[in-house]
Image 1 (cartoon, rainbow, N blue to C red):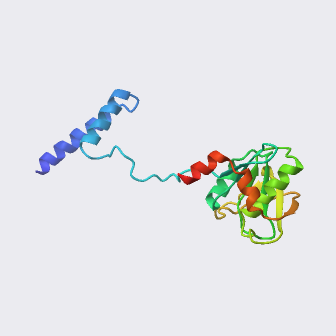
Image 2: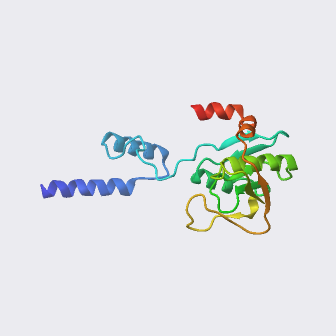
Image 3: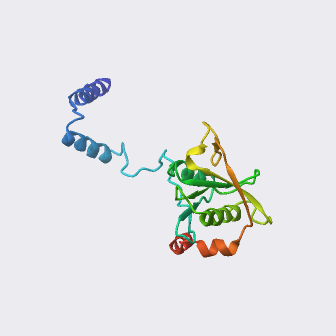
Length: 185
C-alpha cells in the first residue's frame, strides 16, 4: 500500500503543479471538488472580523441637527473614530463615565450645544446628579491611544465645559422616532 500512497501523492503534486490560480474555471472546479470532498464548508462558521456595532441612539435638536449617542464602549469608539473631524464631540466631564456624543455639525448653534450637552449628561453615570459638567471638543481633537481599552480616548487642545441638568423629558422629546422603533426590534 506504500506504492499506492506514493502514486496518489505524485498525482496530487502533479495536479497542484498544473493548477493555474488565474484561471477562473480551474478555481471554480477546484472549489467544487473541495466542497464535495468536505475539505471546505460553504458557510463561514466563525469570523475573525469583529461585527459592526449596532447603530448609536439618534436625536434631532430643535434646530434639526443630528446628535448621535453611543450605547456602549465599543460603539463609543466606533462613533468617535468614524465621525467627521470637524464635527463636535461631547462627554461627561469630571471623570464621570458616559456615552460619547457626536453633533453632526461643524458650527452648531448655542441651542444645539446646550441640548446635546443635556443628552450627554442624561446618558452618563451623572444622570441622577443635579448638575453635570460636559466637555465639548471637535472630533479632530480626539485620539485613540494604541492598545487602549474600548471607549477610552484622549484629546489635545482646548476644551469647553458646559454645565447642565440631565433631563429625561428633553431626551424623549429629541429622540428620533424611527430610532425608537429600531431599538424596540
